[in-house]
Length: 277
Image (cartoon, rainbow, N blue to C red; front, side, top):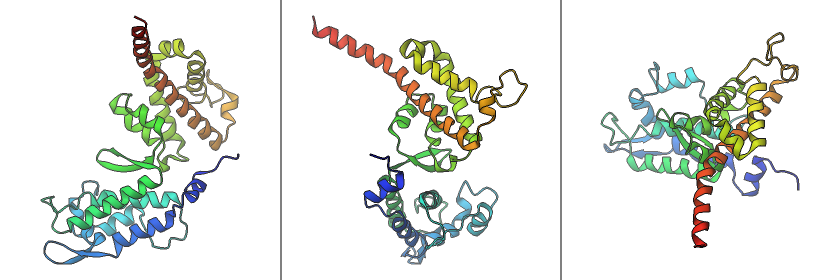
């Protein structure tokens, strides 16, 4: 059976991502509700009125200024629509609405029920399409719900757990530099455990450290004349190199899970031994 792509899977599951987007768009831009003073406002208007309390506004002075500066321009019938467009709008609107609660003493208007319903609707959509929420520096992002990535994020050092999940974020696609940096960070985490990994799975250890050292991750493998130069790597296209970074990332996940399984295996062995007594 040929492999189905993600869009085909969503279509088979009867999930219409454009319709989900339009529902959220209407909730945010067109549907209004009364605030505690009886004034009817859309969620967009609530965000405009309270824009200056948003901590990630940078130096922008209004929501229009923010949209213009960061090139956010959402329409109900976008000319080019895809999954990334939906995710971008979900992240944009969700992060603003998080700060619009009437319980926030800095917030001057807003309907608690309207906001909570919107946040829950976004979460429901995100869950339906197989994504999950992750938070970095108090900013919510939505990443694919990859079980192996989730498992590894829970066992690596806290300061890099976000990096494990972020690798799957849609904005990482095509960003060779960010992917390379993430894999390099994972390489640094695995280096002290190299002997342990070799003892557990020699072939996996050999493969993962080969990639670290020969794919322009830890060494300069692409500049002719450098002692670490690899002609094969130097001649790769950006797409080919990105694909190998993706493969290396998957090898890293497997390596961390193998290492984490050592103690679990010992406990099971002890349990099995106790049955023989």
